Amino acid sequence: MVERAHTIAEEVLFPAALDVDAQGVIPSSHFDLLAMQGFYGLAGDPEHGGIEVDFPSLVTILETLAGGCLTTTFTWFQHSSVVRGLTATANLNLREKYLDAALRGELRGSVAFAGAIPQPPRLWATATDDGWLLSGEAPFVTGWGMVDVLQISARDAALRAGEPTGTIVTGLVDAQAGAGITVEQLHMVAAQGSNTVRLRFADYVLPAERVTAEVSHRDFLANQHLSMRRSGCLAMGVAGRCIRMIGEMGQPRLAELLLAVQDEIRDRLDAGLGDPAMLPAARAAASEHAYRCAGALVVAVGSSGILARQHAQRLVREATFTLVTAGRPEIKDNLLNAFGRGHG
Image (cartoon, rainbow, N blue to C red):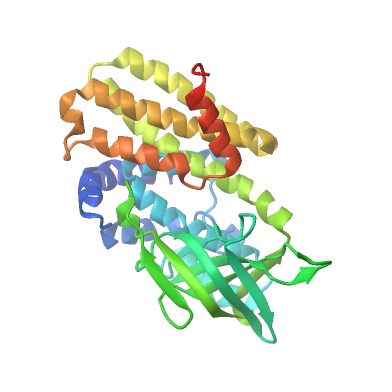
């Protein structure tokens, strides 16, 4: 799978990355290829038909694909959470209905959990006799118009002792506008082809038979640590591509120094899996590193690096994108401290 990822990144994704960026459209053939080569099954349990790779290999795959085309990788990568949700759910009928197709990439999905995490939440779930009503907004939903289902999370609106219970309700909904849901297209500095939108819900019906999980807010956040580590791969992929190009621009010594920093940050990210308190600082360091590497690439390329048909300017914008993608307050604080270091 690592070799396949390298081939796809170098022969398909990177050669098309400037067009994807300029046109704001990911060719459907990119996703078809990833499905055909088994990448939609990476997050699945082999017992259920998934493809097993060890974690270092998964990191390499994600970094490699992101270094080929961040937009494609960011969009495809949302599907992995849908697969994990279906694999782990106690809703066996839902798993039976969707998991096999999801592992093959015949059914494609995305996620929307940002509305459930903040305090106060942006998206609430109100219990009914046969399911839940969702109201509020999901501020960033990727892949709209390209995916079939959306795994959405909302906070239970029920009160206990005058306070919300904190339960997070997660389920699958069809990824299409309809009764109780409106769509606002977002315009971003990078990865516009990801078709990221804001969804607003007004008493949108989530039937009980499509609920995948109900967990405490604490447990939900604990499960986000692995997601934070994986999102760091996007930044590291952008940085890795910049470092390669810096070396190709006749700056091998700088490339060597930046690669050493990259290896150290990767070690910190891995260590954060065992010590989650370390993870926000390591995740922030990954994006700061990508931002610095992209800036260094522009300087190495020279004035032509800011032209529209240059990878350098694209990678600067994509590095900027990773500064806030899958962000958390603690990551933001670490980044601001890093940018202010030595200036206060």
